[in-house]
Length: 278
Image 1 (cartoon, helix red, strand yellow):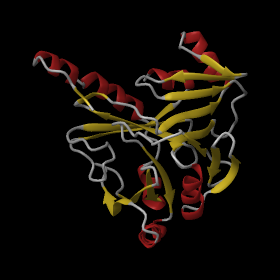
Image 2 (cartoon, rainbow, N blue to C red):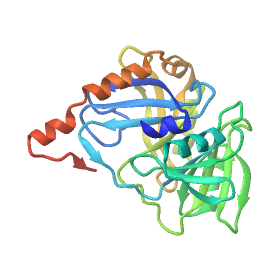
Image 3 (spheres, rainbow, N blue to C red):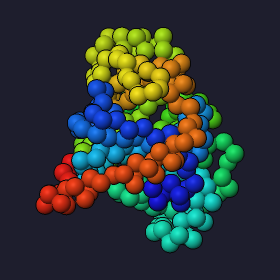
Image 4 (tube, rainbow, N blue to C red):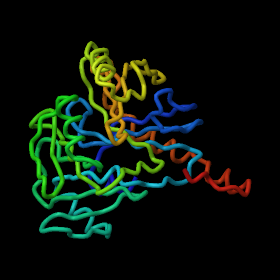
């Protein structure tokens, strides 16, 4: 968990599961897994990242689907420099860095806003116009910027929320084997309408409306879609999600305890085996 220390992300909650998620929340992998939610504040009004750990998987092949997260935080830049974390200045005041596993972060060396410092999440697309039509025309996102020359567009649901940047990659989108997805909450009553619209428009539905259980916590309802490039999109019922996503004061300790108790590397080594490379 080194990079969250660099950018000052907080552990909001940590949950352990004994078997794979029926909505493939942990990818197409069976067996024990965990998820840790990290962010600058509560999930109710901040963008948060879900860090998923499959106990039996040693590494993932990354594609060109997820192109990075951009943060506005001079404190994060300062932290990285103090810790000797590799930074590359790609344009004036903007630094590129990598989290363990190879995921890109972009740090803008500006005063951290009082609201959420996470400015945008960037996804690769094969056809910018087709993707914009999907995310704006079907899913109702507002177009904030569109640059045909640079083949990028910036969209979002609200001025004060993290934005989604779509950037053409000049070919097919490769999702690798990490199987990430982006999620939004909405009123529970809207979920059947979203599913019906996708059916009407002949769009891909990966998981029809389903209830997902979390041990000891609220059960949430979700619909999971795929955009023209196969990016997974989860819409979750807000009412139950507000209960599920409450900040757990014990979250960081639960994570520390889980990491301390994880003997999977030793087990594989003792059996002269390597964890699977997904």
